[in-house]
Amino acid sequence: MKTVFKKALFILFLSSFIGFSQSLPLSKDAKISILTCGLGNETYSYFGHTGIRVSDPENNFDVVYNYGAFDFRTPNFVLKFAKGDLQYFATVHSYADFFNEYTYEKRSIFEQELLISQDLKQKLFDQLNAVLASEDRYYTYKFIDKNCTSMVVDIVNKTLNGNVIVKKEDADKTYRSILFPYFNGHFYDQLGTSIIFGTKVDQMGTRIFLPFELKNSLDKTTFQNKPLAAKSKTLLEFEKETPKSWWNNVYTYLFILLFVIFARNKTVDKIYFTILSLIGIFFVVMGFYSFHQELAMNYNILLFSPFLLILVLFSILKNKLWTYRFSLINFVLLVVYFLFLINKAHFFITLPLIITSGVLLVRTAIRNKKPIPIII
Image (cartoon, rainbow, N blue to C red):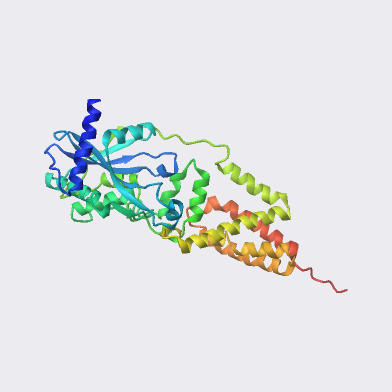
């Protein structure tokens, strides 16, 4: 109880310093380190987390600074989140609370102490507190450019007066290729992110944006001809459990698509085309509405073509000529999509959809093709 009281008292004490934009002098025994937290099975934890730990035994405090917090009570939360103008913010918590949270979630914690001078430690600590005391505490989240990891990289590099921490591996891979394996065990999340992301994630992943990218880069980063960080220590270790689900897997995905193909039912075909077209329309709306650059220029619309809805309407109106024509138009778009997608990370996960759409479009075209008269 006494320990808890001391920690609470320190948080209050630290807050008072932050509130007056003053700095708390660190002792010579103070340590600043980067914490990398393991992957979880909740959507927000698929990629891990990055925090900055400041520990000072002489001053009797041990805290973790985090970027990436948000408030569910924000008015119009869902719309702001979708649009990409939801304000995220930086926070500070006691290390004990931080540790207990990840123990509860059964996620590992790795620590890399920054081997920097006392002056630089103080500078980084002051900057972290200055952020919390100013409007800089709030920022607009960007999936690649402004997240819990990239913000840590930025503030450490700012402290070191240079672009010291840079990506050391996988710079020759696209962001999409880097992200793809993180969804293992979450099939429909993997499929959903594959089709909702546009051209930005097909750029080369030259920027550190994931926690374990930062961890691996720190292992190979030097500063003033010395290692920037000490060898990684494991503070908490859990083996990630891959979830098992009777529905969230490739088998239900293939079963549904095979059913659509072999049903040979016009109504089933129309429902399938309608669903794809509505998804395509959603992509178009989000591309214009959202500030998330990852959602812009989404070429997956060639598969989820809004023109499929026009095809369905002509089919309902029993207009064979235009049903046939829009079958051909959508088939051409599908071929273009197939050729464009061959070298992309999500080629194989979308291939069953491509095949299903191709079969149904050809079948619809054959059904509505005007027979050629035979003159005898």
